Length: 480
Image (cartoon, rainbow, N blue to C red; front, side):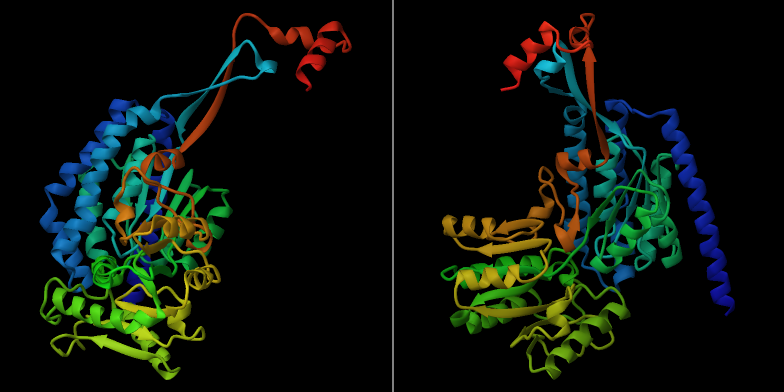
């Protein structure tokens, strides 16, 4: 009880502090509502030494939070992607800020029209636990490029990383420009209820609904980056060894704890056993041992570990064929490391078939023809990502035009997320809105249309009384 009271006081203090930060950022934005391109670029570039000079601390914080997080996965998926994003935004921000000229119609002649991109104000970013550095830095870059102030709420599931990023950001920016907030669920709820000028949330679909409801009270625009069950379709004739190697890149990264990780495989029915054997061999090649292997990332916490184990128990009880791949037959029980596991003979009443997996488990679904595979995808909520393996470009185009997904990789998995010049976002249950690329700048900007009239006032000729010659001329030649 004493610990609960202490934590309550801590969270209450954090909420009070958070409200103070929000008001400070709002006041700072009022004082400087349109930072110059030099100021924006300088703010963006401050992040590069912040990350590079503290690589070892970031790697260690994530290792602590996960129990084991492969250092190279942190370098590849958190640091490299963030640094590339910094370079990209610094290079593009001047071009994005330029007003966009637009044409005027006959009724507005003579006049000029253009669109200016104005910062919206104070942006809130809610970060998930799976890639807490990259998914904090990515939205921050877009918001800074657009000229905004930013508050970042880190996940309570990554306390070490949250504390480190809070310190690094405080050393890099004044708190009325960028600030990091930590805390439990009550703090997160209070954060989402603040009247931000834009709120971006990355996380589960169920929590996304709560975020949207909270933001609706303030009519806060929201970008939701959610998840869902991302399908992976293997074409009839695609080389299986190639498919497995490329799918493994996306599924093994972070032990499958990735919002765009392949969730289920749609495999030609006559090739299912071929896939199983190739997958078994690939996992054995990548992870000949798991228990003491620093390259094999753990499940983030006990709650997520038990959730995944529950999926397997439920599926097995309902008739699924479970293939656990543990090359050295090690006891992983005390480590929160979970072997890569294939689940076959799947039925729709299994929990694993209904929920996003978010771990090293993968369904294998047989199909008889491409249309049947697409029907399976289209009968389910629209996913955040879709993967299709086929050298036939005609088939690929058919898949693109007959499915909906937030993004697509052809003959690869996950890589599209790292393309800075492309928008990233979901559709329907997998999210709404975009960031990354120019679309990220636009998300955090108000596109303000401006019309300017010169000294000659053409509209005076169409003022009442109506029915004059000018009116008859306009109606005759323009209403066609």
